[in-house]
Image 1: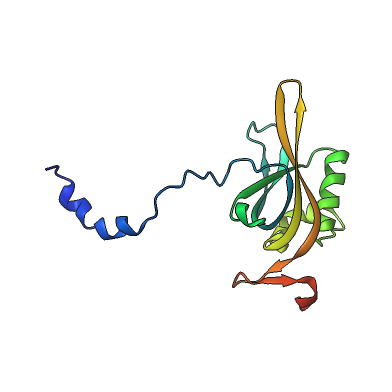
Image 2: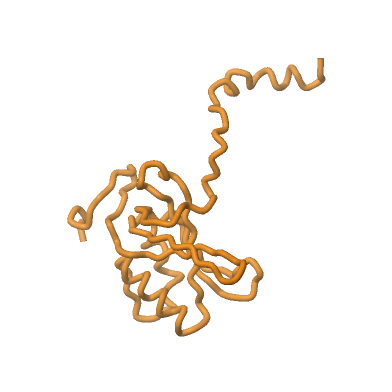
Length: 156
C-alpha cells in the first residue's frame, strides 16, 4: 500500500462522479461552415511571437448542437489600415460603433455575451493551411442566466 492511498481515499466518491473523458478537444478547429456563437472573451495584446498588436476574440459555439461549447478563436490585427478596416466592420456587425479606435480598450466589455453568426473558411497557401473566421452578423445577446435574447428583447 502506497503512503498516499489513505490521503487519496477521501476523494473516491468525487472521482466516481466525474465523467469519463470523451476525447473531445474543445479547442480543435471546427469544420468549415456557419456557426452561431457568443463572445466569451476579448482582449488586446501582442501576438504569440510578440511582433504585432492584435485583438483576440474567444467565441463559444451554441449551434449547430453537435459543436455546442466548442471554442472559435479570431484574431484582429491592429497595425495597418487594412487591419483596422476589418476590425471596424466586425465591431459594427456586433453593434459597436466607435468614434476613435483608441476607445476600444474601454468598450471591450460591451462585446461580451453578444451572439453572432460566424463563418469559418480554410485556406491553403502552398503546403500551409489555416482557417479564417468571419463575423457575419449580430444575432442577439445572452443574459446572465444564459437565456438567449433577440435584439427586440433588449431594453435599449
